[in-house]
Image (tube, each protein chain N blue to C red):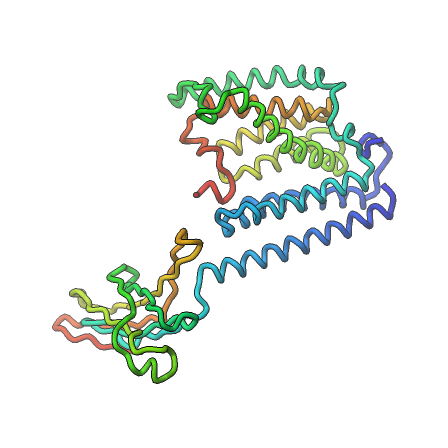
Amino acid sequence: MSAIANDAPRDIGDRQLAAWEIASVVSSMLIAEWIAASVAGGSRLVVAIPITLAFAFMITSHRLRSETLRDLGFRFDNFARAGMLLLIPMAVTAVLCLVVGRWFGRRPDFSNWHAGTPIIVQLVLGFGWGLAQQYVLQGFINRRAQLFSNQGWLSVLLVAAVFAVLHLPNVWLVVATFAGGVVWALVYQRAPNLFALAVSHSVMTWVVVSTLPTSALHHLRIGFKYFG
Amino acid sequence: MDTRSKSKLGHLLIAKSMAEALLITAVAVGFYFATSNPYLRGVVDYADNHAVAGWAVDEAHPAARVEVQLYIDGIFVADQAAAEFRPDIREARRAEDDRHGFVFKLPPIPPGDHEARVYATHVSSAGARRTLQLIGKPLRFHVTAVEKGDARR
């Protein structure tokens, strides 16, 4: 059974360990975004090393904690429930993006994500990319945050803050990912389903790219590449 | 989670941290060697209101000419290949031939204290990066209102 489902009091060692696990994975991502990307130039291999280390660590951690794929959210039984929970926040965010975009003089263009690629292909690729991000964010960090501070706002805000920090220095993305991080972390704590979150991630990325000012989004660049 | 698993996870955290520390070190050292030339040697011999002169040799490629750039008070003035006749450099066994000197003729410079810096250019990443490396030490010189500058090393 999942480690977080156990309501028995946890010793301080477990909480500390969970905090260190979060710090370790976040530091790997920051190393990839800022250090490896800045000095390695076009070498994706150097950037891939800390990412690979982080994934190897997360998988080993799941095994040591006896977490199953179902525990992490790779499941379909609660897909509809998670989808229903996501529907209203997604609709509200989409309307908000449209209003903000219009405020800054942007006319929405839903064919502009990757010009020349069919939108269905873009959404499928976005789903894969979203699934990877949501796995790290919810399947690992959210679960460890719950070990650290139980379910609730503290762990939700921690997850959202981590997601936002990983999108520095792109201010618009920091704001968008913090808001998205709060919603996704809340939904995951109620209905842990990574597939529904990945669909939401993909669709909301499409909405953000299609509605918010292109110059402000800076081609969704983050980390050192933001300046390149 | 049992104690044994916790211990394994702790060891894993330490191992991962060490691997990342090694990666960062390797990347930093690699970046240093990619963006600078540790075999570059050279000196700025003198600087006055007429000229700045010295020599530069890449000891890894002693037959090659080093490209140098002159900056006065931090402002780019001129560049050239260090290919002036300097037999003393070969006699000191710094180079294989006599042509590793540079002499920059200066444009008119306003009176006052000035600083001359000469940099060698270093190309890396198949031309994607071009970095500057200081040759010797910066030389300060003074230009009087009448004329005549003096050089101090």
